[in-house]
Structure formats: structure tokens, C-alpha cells
Image (cartoon, rainbow, N blue to C red; front, side, top):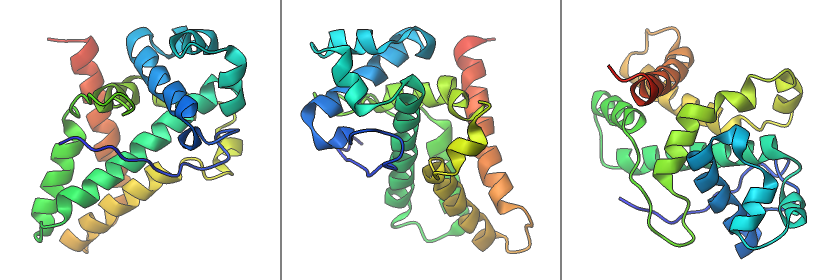
Length: 197
């Protein structure tokens, strides 16, 4: 299943909307590819600029810094994942089966995308597993959160929590369980990737 979609990501994350131009989309696409290949610490705006045959100044017109770029990528991913949840649950009536479908989606690698302008979902998934803590395990997280930049993640957790509550109305902590499912899945996938057997 491969989709070409775009989402409106919180405007406080970027300086200029990357979805508004081909060069903006190329910045994000190449950043995803480079972060997957090199790791977040080794990616620079200069390397991204070289990959898009442009200048660092062009990249800086879209993003203030690397942290904001990673935050944008992760927000796009969470929007995409919520889209996939909605898509997969369209014809699933049983709350139990809905929860199974969500767990299956969260615990499996997304397929690699092949479109020239499409963000590589396999790479995105890998980046979320390996790099996502770098956007919220920072000293300024409370200040950053004032702009609601973590809303797509919270929205996804709320959606999963609502299904947990519908399945078992007596369960007291559906939001906590929903984020635990996501984070535990990522931790386990990280261990499989970097600590096999």
C-alpha cells in the first residue's frame, strides 16, 4: 500500500512551508534519506543542499535549524500514521479487531516508497524509531510544547485511547496505554535493529 499524501504541519515548526514548493519537498525528502543513511548527528544543511543542488541558505529559508527540521519530519510521520489508522479501520467494526489492526500497524515496518517526490515511509519509520527522542528529550521541551508542536503525536494517542476506552470502558488509563504501546514498539524495534540476538 503506497500513498502520496501531504499534511498541514504546525506552521510554528518551519519558516516557510516545505509543501508549498518543489524545492521545499526536496529538502524534506533528501533530509529523510540522509538522516536514514547517516544518522541525525551527521546530517548538516550543507549536505542537504548538496543533495538538492542548491545552497545552505535555501535550506535555512525553510527551517531555522536541524532540530526544527527533524521535528517537521516526525510531525509529518505522525500525521501519516493517523491517516493510515483511519484508512485501515474504515471497514473494521469490532473494537478488538481495530486494536489488533493498530498494534499490527505500529509494530511493523512501513513499506519503502518509490515515488520521485514521495517521502520514503520505510526511512521515516526508521527515523522515528532511532531519532525521535531527540526532539522531545531536550531542555527546552516545555517551551517548544507551548506551540503545540507535538499535537499530531498526541492526536494519534488520543485516537488509540478512544478505541481502548470503547473496547473496555472500565480501563482507567487509555491514553497512557496508547503511548506505551507506541513507545514500547519503537524501543523493541530499536533493539532488534541494533542489538540482534
